[in-house]
Length: 150
Image (cartoon, rainbow, N blue to C red):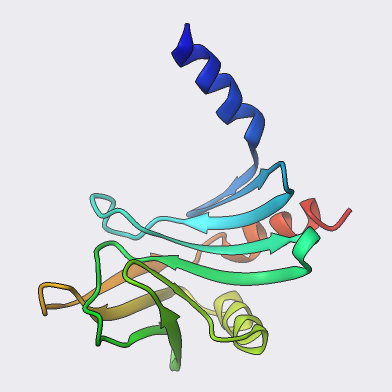
């Protein structure tokens, strides 16, 4: 019974807006937040990349990366889309664009590319990269933005 109640709560909190090839668009309530999200190509890895909209906080198309494993404290995190490279601000497992201008540049680059990668050095001192397909990203980003626009 508790499991069913928990499942009902999760369903109420997160709503699927749509699945667009390799990307999904979702909405969460309380406070409202919409986001487009994808998993890395290597499905056995945890992690994700998301583009989020938070109308209450006036956030538009903000990048959030959850790394597939912890990174070294001293390691940089670089997001690469085609020939564009973006240095991200990072914590132990998460990374973000340093500002809204960079968020917009990343989303614009995503719209014209086939894949993106996030590279860093793990806590074990070995380099790693999380790779994401971008097929469906533009549609999912647009759907998430539209869902939180009204």
